[in-house]
Length: 168
Image (cartoon, rainbow, N blue to C red; front, top):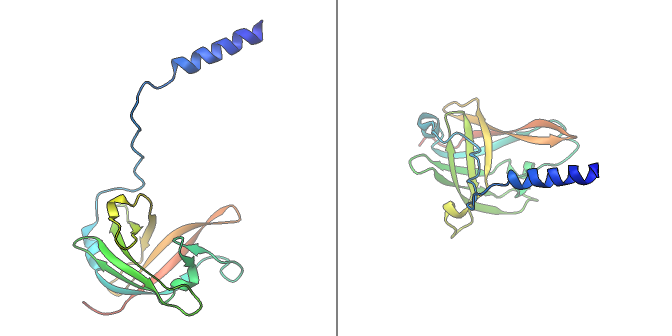
């Protein structure tokens, strides 16, 4: 009898706590939406990734941005347009898949770089997934994007080193 009463109370409690809302809640924001315009203007132009570093890089591979092995990004070219937060990136490294895509990006007040890789012909507002990386060591001619990866159950940094190609 006690088990039946406990089960009845549990079911009653679950029904009483059930949400009455019929709308789907909006997803929580993943990053601050206030933009850091000066940081964005500072990376306007063409850039190349000169190195990708992470602990254990000699022993295992990391798939970056769901596109290719992280080392395939060494030599990749990125273009950032600061007035509309668009651009493109392309990989043309030997022994790696060729890849080119428009991107939508921003840097927020928390120093986070928000990136969407957009397929050609697709509107960026329909792309619901992306990446949030930390901006570090930003100068006129270089900066780093730092992502978190899982290495044996521990979070480690993967650092993409960018160098400016020209002085536009």
